[in-house]
Amino acid sequence: MKILSLLFCCTLFYCCHSDVQKKPTPLKNSIEEIVKQIGNPHLSTTFINLTDYGAVGDSLIDNKPAFDKAMQACQEKGGGRIIVPAGVYLINGPIHMVDNSCIDLQKGAKLVFGTHAEDYLPVVPTSWEGTLLYNYSPLIYAYKVKNVAIIGEGTIDGNGKDGFSQWYDKQKPAQRKTREMNHQDTPVEERIFGSGYFLRPQLIQFYQCQNILVEGVTIANSPFWCVHFLKSENIIARKVKFNAFNKNNDGFDPEYSKNILIEDIDFNNADDNVAIKAGRDHEGRKIGISSANIVIRNCRFKGLHGVAIGSEMSAGVENVYVENCAASGYCKRGIYLKSNPDRGGFIRNIHIDNVRFGEVEDALFITSYYHGEGKGYATDIHNIFVSNFYCKRASNAGLAIQGFPTKKVRDIHFSNTKIDSCKTAISLSHTENIVFNDVIIGEEIKVPSAVK
Image 1 (cartoon, one colour):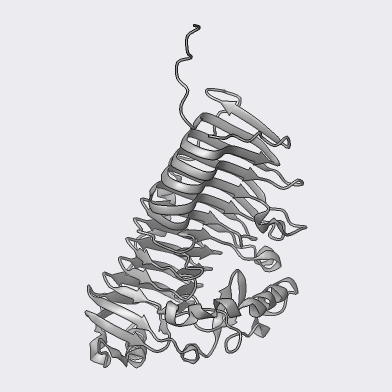
Image 2 (cartoon, helix red, strand yellow; image 1 turned 180 degrees about the vertical axis):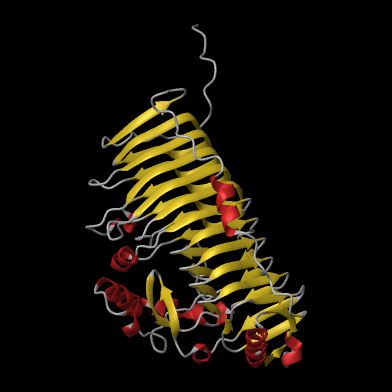
């Protein structure tokens, strides 16, 4: 194991049982308080069979009209659970959910979305990489609704590989334009994208929604982010399985959202498993709605990064609890907190407990200088608590923390942390009050050898 020398611009404490640097104890009831506040979803007891509205699961007939009629029936009845029997249902266009609606995918049911971009017009209010705008409709879209659910043992296939994902190499001009509009404070109603701009839509988006449940389903082949919770609250995601390998196929992206429980998930994503966000740059700071009170527990990570915070997090992220999770396959990075000096905002009160990884590139990485760019708005990163953390091997860094010269990353507490092997054990720059309590990186040193 090679250990690089610590950079001089940090203050480091190694502690075993120090009263002075003792790790603060988080509130014992914090997780259960969040879960209690979310409550249990209330699913409609009015059952609506999709086939009664003309749906045919033969993979050929367009079932968009059937879904539209079923959603209209939900609205007229004050709510409904749309039962989708076994079969393969082609859908040429988006599903727009309404208040008190539930899509219940029975075992063997599969929704496959069409690949013609014009079917996802007209544009709708949404966001793209942290900037609010109008774009193609997400494939399943819930806007300003309450009590919505997607449940069952079936599969949602975004058909991204043969459709929108092919736009990845064409998106740069529109991507730059979204960021310019953000920095220039262009009114949102003037940020019209859609046709000709090549910004891929999310597979599932809940925007300004309350009381959300996503449970049991398999999510695959997304055109962009898989499940985006935007300005929403009281959310449960449970027992979901991901098989999403296209560009930017994050699993769950909570943004400007709070009171969220993500549990018992089988991730298998080409990007972040969970990516917690809170808006980009000027707009994020202006909106000022932090993402908060998020519990991630009993999950199996596999993909790019297990849990990421950022990089779009300008309104701040706080009160995040990750517990009892483990990697079920390769992850590039285990825990990744990332921001840069364009963002501002804060990342604070993050608790990582009983989390295990196998082989990674970096076990835990915190950076205030993501991509080495940005100026003027350094992020305040502090109060990060890591306990009972294990990694078998990190090909690059065990623990890497990079602050910013004018705003150090501070008050980071490690306890009962073990990394069996890595290239660089610890790399700290522009940090302050980094506390180690029972930390072993490399082979544990036990009884000293006797004098010969």
